[in-house]
Image (cartoon, rainbow, N blue to C red; front, top):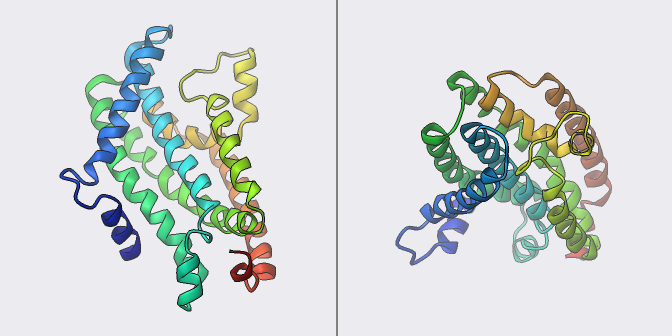
Length: 241
């Protein structure tokens, strides 16, 4: 946590507003999307506001985990070469950086949803429990992508390109319609279920059982793969970076 805070301080050094810029940037970006895509949506304005904000907030956290995971060991090269420290420290540092940013985004999103959106107070409380679930999935993901991208730098570019495409294939700015292609795309996209963990309690006040099951299967699988890869490759990471 200390390393993450120090890194963020360095990033926003000499800025008058500092980390508040994170929430401002999120609010402006999300606001433009609500105005543009809300005007062409046939959904209720309050519901669409909550739908887009909750989905966009969850997407930003998930996508930042994925893209940052690719660079977690490469960006820590000087630390790894100079200090004997568990590799998990660099994973947790990166995760904490994104969690701190998410706090500012979350404050901005909740404020907008309370003023303009549709939500459930009880559901909003349950929605917050989705964030620790995202972290449990992120830890093995950081290990897997961090090692693989250190070995093959082209994979980093591939993941970044894939995430740009996946943004439009994930129900963030659009709402799936039953018995249409959009519903098929949403059902086939694993990230849809991760967004559902945060979005459904907030907007509908219900617990998404199917999304929880999908999350559990994916997370257990990632932990098993991460354990196997880390066990076999932990001693070679230093040579790849």
